[in-house]
Image 1 (cartoon, rainbow, N blue to C red):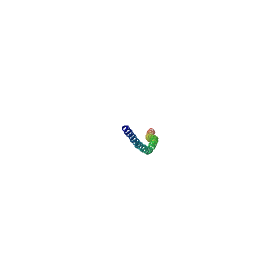
Image 2 (cartoon, one colour):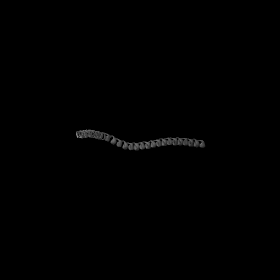
Image 3 (cartoon, rainbow, N blue to C red):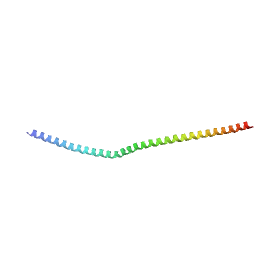
Image 4 (cartoon, one colour):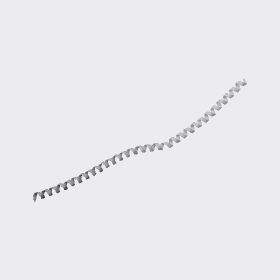
Length: 107
């Protein structure tokens, strides 16, 4: 009978050891959960910054389009200035030719 009682006591001790192990494991899991919560809180501002950067990308694209349009307008202005100079030069040549032509026919 003593052997049975010893065996039962050893079994009780094993259950006590398992309970201690479970208690220690629970404490570790709770500490890990707290660490994960802190990391999650630390990462949240990064998500906010990421959202702001996405919004900024859209604004940059709009600004880029405006700059490209302004560049096209400037190029058109330069072209018109060049054409106006060419027309003015052609007009001067035409007036000079008329003046010379009239002078030749009069004289």
